[in-house]
Length: 340
Ligand SMILES: [Zn+2]
Image 1 (tube, rainbow, N blue to C red):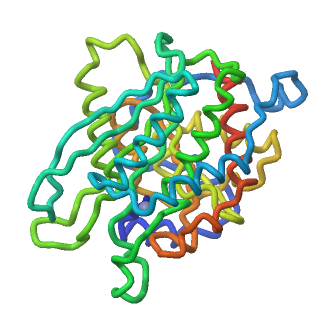
Image 2 (cartoon, rainbow, N blue to C red):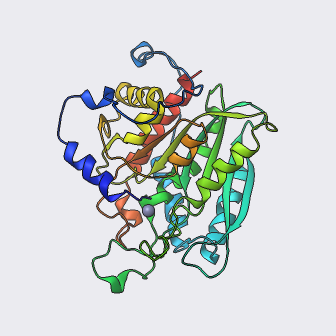
């Protein structure tokens, strides 16, 4: 991603710097948050020395998958690059025994004359389990690299390595280990299309919409409420979290909507020594997790919004750290094996 509202950044920055945790409990206005069922977990210090097998996630292999995706070039929604990417990802997960569903739909972006074909990819493990967890990332690339100072560079090929694709590549490698993962829940990897199918941010009648894929997914989830058996009890979104020297403070919408999950995940991170996770206040970032939270799926965004190559042509594979991919994967696989 990701879009941050101007005023939101202002507030986040104004409050930054305090070492105390007062902000973690302060909540003075707004509607009372709903309290959906969330997984529970024993306190992390209770399992520091237990015997849960460690998942042998391979950061180098994950980076190879990332290179494979970025070598396709831009993967903008509705383009040949996206189609090629869909084939690569689908083949990968089907070979590993997952059930892969394309959630296809058409929509017209505000600045486009015609509709665009979008597809979220849903990769299901143990599809018959009714209690489920979502691990998600967006897999489209932004059509313009509009953080480039020189506008002449905006339309040059933008591969978006850490932005979206890093999460996808981490999930591709995680797919190799799903048979070893001991988790009480069924797990769906959900890859969102149209997260940033954005050509114009300021135009008369409103800028282009973000989060087209996650909005569609969330609306469909609500619409099928009475028909479907499965229920998502938690979601984790991975965005911009695999760069070299990544810093992962708590994203504030996640804190507001899914505090117990934040405490679990950052608690696990502390226990396993994942130093990039910082239990301190981060930004408030608009991202795909908002649609899921609105649909009653408590979802946390793991994001480094200070990534210096965000929406620049320099967001390339060499900026991504295989060790960081392994670190995030270790936290999540440990967490998945602890929740109940
Ligand atoms: Zn982005």
